[in-house]
Image (cartoon, rainbow, N blue to C red; front, side, top):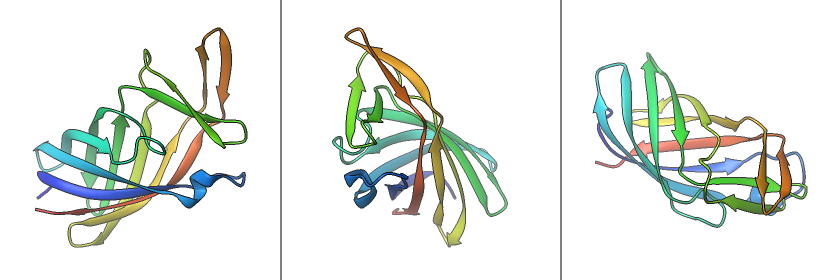
Amino acid sequence: MMIGTWKGKYKYNLKQNSEFNKKEVGFTVEITEFDGESFIGTIQDDDKNYGTEGLGTIEGKLDGHEITFIKKMPIRSILYGNNKQKVEFENKKHMPIHYHGTLNLKNSYIGTWKIKGGISFRNLLLYVSFGTQGTWEMVKVD
């Protein structure tokens, strides 16, 4: 059953040498609705310095042993300067984060995530993001 609390972590997989590559960011998912295929809930990263700030939403699907979901966070953040620094844009929503994974063990999933690139403005400065990706895993805790 998908409904309930899930604990997970994700890692960055950046081409450049970056401190973000060395960091695991924990997160908590609360799945509130599940119809046997589709689910919705909330998600929150544990570390606002390396993760994304705020309470977000997830919408996803289960297809056999495969899981896909989209994480939507309220505050946009991008990595810039060869992925060494993070900039937040408090008045803009984060780009959707696409998760794909497979059932690893009972009530445990592993997979990959990615964010498409885009452009953002802050204080009249243009920031270009070429996209970010990494790996993730989560396990049900209740």
